Image (cartoon, rainbow over all chains, first blue to last red; front, top):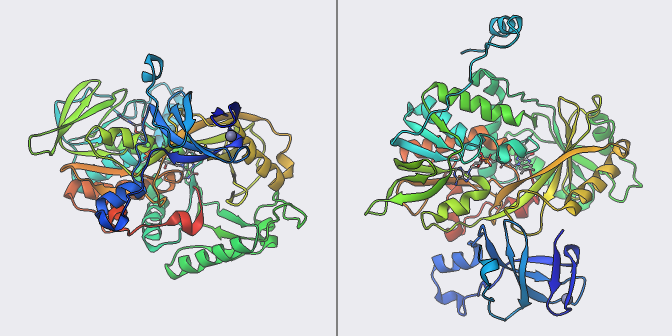
Length: 98
Length: 416
Ligand SMILES: Cc1cc2nc3c(=O)[nH]c(=O)nc-3n(C[C@H](O)[C@H](O)[C@H](O)COP(=O)(O)OP(=O)(O)OC[C@H]3O[C@@H](n4cnc5c(N)ncnc54)[C@H](O)[C@@H]3O)c2cc1C
Ligand SMILES: [Zn+2]
């Protein structure tokens, strides 16, 4: 079970308080009818699925109820950073760069 | 070498010391007509049918670990074909047909046991969904029948069907030809038969890159044992498909999740069939060794850690203890995880990719073991001819652009 730090509640809480929300920073095309099928399909279905550092959304459903983003190493499952939704993806130091 | 009563008897008399290796372990050649990445059941079956039915034996299967060590050797081996949509019915039933004679075909006992797969319904929504499945399946000539709670109890006596349960059993869909097979034997049987026809299976050799020629077409693969040339490359790497396809610059509509299973200490014959409940998430059958084989869910998040969180298996065990009160004091012996590649519509992707010469067979997610013979059979056609087999055609990568999804997720919410 992951221990996840909610950036709003500023506490580390067990994973079962949260709901995973998929890849972070996936922007919906501003004008869906203006993009072609390939771009729309990319938005709907294609994901990075990295073996390494992933940026993902979590929602603190049994806490403040808010969405935030998280950087996690998908090999070790170690959480490297959590940050509020809307904030840019933080750059990691040498430690997170594996 | 052919297994027969005489060979088993003579080897038994010789203390079983004279059995030969079941497949060759060659060093890779400089090039092949085709290279398959991943020696799981699907990759090995693909190689087998390429050699057997297409006469293509200048083929290598490249495996980073040991053959069958991925999801093939980690799954709970449930086999059934009662999926909802016609496309799925066709491919899973194709596999179901091949399972019937597979031991004879491979001269290797894969221990396919048609003991029946019973899927429990717990509420009105389940009843309506399952009856819809039963009707759809029967229209397609696929075995599936609706049975009452009493009949479910008669079919599987240790099941608790009392109406006082939090999620009482109100009926079930039963596929009698469904069942289980020995997962390792499936990988070994295909490996042995493919190797005997000349296919090179190269273990402990990771594919680290996909080389392309100036036209952009595939030229071969970089591996930890050097470059191997091939004009055709078939990627059958399950949970690692995204990472392998990225080597050719191809993005995939896949996410990789850990999926767990666990087994109990062995006990006397306890249950005669496979029981599944999607609603409360529990699956169980009994292996021939006597262990109860239990499937848990995926973790909530994508990961390559190849182990699952404890609360996921606890959740499943709570449901198992509710359905089968007699198992409450059993000890669990082992638990483990595999990395499953999940598509947005929970159906596989089989066929061509945007890169010439590069083919993919993936996205089987939590439920591809049952499809192993059929998947290998249709993908062999694709690799041999460059065209999708009619059964595989709907499962194209392109469906995520055209929108022709095969939405088994919404239809059934079914795993395995
Ligand atoms: C716990 C669990 C329970 C399951 N239960 C069921 C069930 O009851 N019924 C069912 O039908 N299905 C079930 N499944 C799903 C099923 O196991 C898979 O869909 C199926 O086995 C996939 O077979 P495969 O040959 O494609 O993959 P795998 O057996 O995983 O083979 C892929 C191979 O590719 C290799 N590979 C990866 N990357 C590279 C590389 N770079 N270079 C070389 N080789 C590479 C891997 O090492 C691996 O051996 C379950 C899965 C799990 C994990
Ligand atoms: Zn919070």
